Length: 209
Image 1 (cartoon, one colour):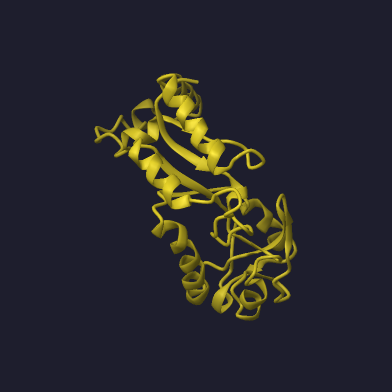
Image 2: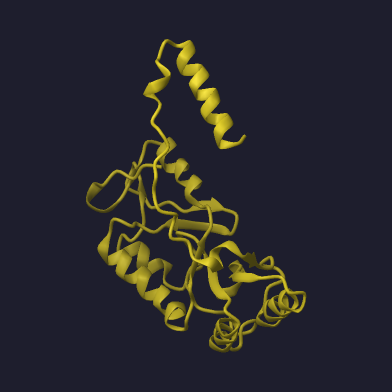
């Protein structure tokens, strides 16, 4: 539904309820959103089962070949050796730095898939668990939650030590030239904690949806 149609419907509802039409806030005269041009171009990516350095390079080559403008490419979940450890799989990405440079030379930004989950097979999972880096349920347990890539725990964004560890891992790929992350939707799974009595973070902070 177009914006003017929405306003018309709202106005009718308000009038029917006895609210005077002049109470509707007039259109604001504001500056355009500071979006960069590249954000409005195509964002190209391949499924995790298909994406490698070779196929990702070829994909952008084909876009350019047919004069299809590309603003960014997203590298899907299989790029890491373990989910959310931010270490590239060198079998499929033998020269990540070179790939990033080649994309930037073509004015293409590169963003990487990531979520807030630390899976039980993460190389440092036991350490993070022992240091209370994860959100806990109402009984004080950081119980792994099943999501589409296995079983993992939520990183506790309220814990400064957890954040230092988390960001230090991210620094690896950011220092190579990554432009950012495509943060996938694992947030609904926190409902397992909340529905079971609550979710608790650092210093007994309540974690809400």
